[in-house]
Amino acid sequence: MLALLVAIQFLPERFPYMLLNIAYVIVAYAIALKFQYGKQEITDSDRFAFHSNWRVVGLSLLCFVASLLVVVVLGFSIERILVLANWDFG
Image 1 (cartoon, rainbow, N blue to C red):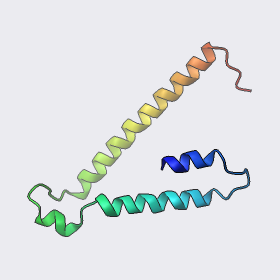
Image 2 (spheres, rainbow, N blue to C red; image 1 turned 180 degrees about the vertical axis):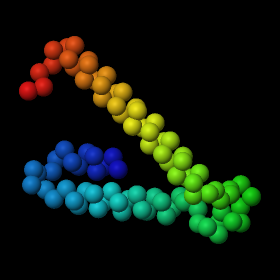
Image 3 (cartoon, rainbow, N blue to C red; image 1 turned 135 degrees about the horizontal axis):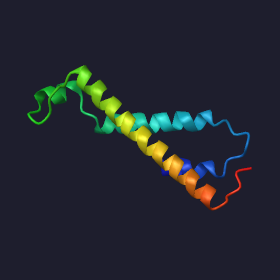
């Protein structure tokens, strides 16, 4: 992932950036295959259990709202700092 972020800086303007998205998806898929447990592994394990879909949806929404709040607060904070420093947005 870090290599992709570094590579972006050296790519030409007319580079098809969809290739970077595809590379990101392939890397994420490989990581998920390597580290995620399968259904049979979860069933056989004493350490893990299945949860309802509603619990998963609720926790996902909670994490989304928390992330959104962090992004909004940071965005407004950075904007306020730049305004106080008389930064020209133009």
